[in-house]
Length: 127
Image (cartoon, rainbow, N blue to C red; front, side, top):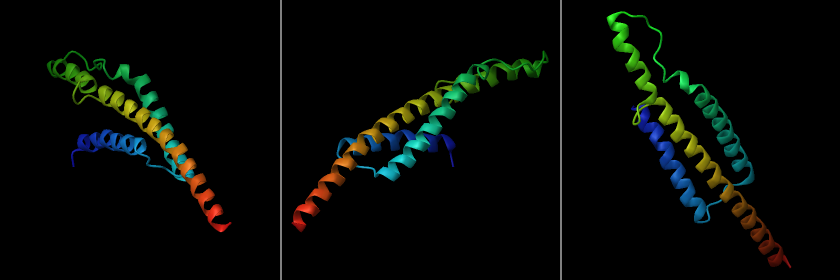
């Protein structure tokens, strides 16, 4: 399985979550709490990785052999390539996580409102 394709699925899932939240999709309190906790933890991890990412963009100290001269720029480009690089991927993931957090925050009040409306309807029906 192509791991990059799996990561691209994150962006798609976040877009779907945002669309669902804007159309009234709700996440229950416990479910939202678990998702928010996971998103927050991932945001911390991604931020920490980005803080250290500058060193990935530097050419490693491999010496002066002909092979080292070939590998040094290649190693740095793995981190910075705009299409498949590690740093651009982390930046996209950081944005996706921020979007997921926003979508979850939109869906949580909708759940509370829906839950209260349903409770009121049940109480009114019992009266």
